[in-house]
Image (spheres, rainbow, N blue to C red):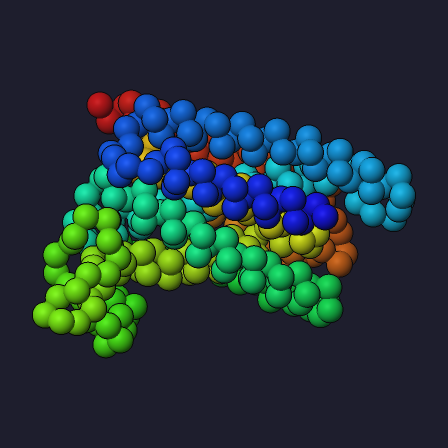
Length: 313
């Protein structure tokens, strides 16, 4: 029943979002995006109280289940991990929009449908990830090693050429399946051109963003599974972070360059959760340790970035 109510609430809000709040395509200002970002972050943290209440009732009936305070802390920790790992995702989305010359007033609609795809894909990944962790003990070593490998790769990566979505594999595959029009018709994903159905740049942009989200999910989902294998905690923390990603994109897209040291925070977080997963069968960190480490890592990255930006000016 809890799962049904939670998913129904998500679907209702998404329907209101596109059908009421953003029915008319418009440019989302930083002020509007800031308000929505604040709303989503507030709702996400308030939901930890719902988690506490749900698990308190469950704990009374079944003392072997997760304690309510621990469940709330695991949820918040998972949410902060997903939120922090979204920073790179936001930067890539900005590059994709720029590459396909998507007008600002149409970007919200693309991200809306992108969020729906992301929710479905994350649900599938979480479902199978939880099954693997519960059925195969050694899979935690695979996930932990993968997270540490990702952190090391981020630390030692060289300056690469700017990502060009039009040179990506997904763009070439789309062109082989359906003709791609080189002009846009309002917010439509498909148009009729020369008596054939063609995909517009908006649809191509949507698919490229979906594929990139799948790539980022390969890091974020195992990272949250390192905190807890409880499917509802993993799913709810992941979904709240994803739902707030759109407004956060419009709020932060033009300011990401100011947070240059945040990447080192992400490296520290990935390394920490990777180590946590590698030693989980031998030692389990208390919930407050994980939450404190992630919070301090994020705060340090933001503060150092802002100080560095201030000095450069």
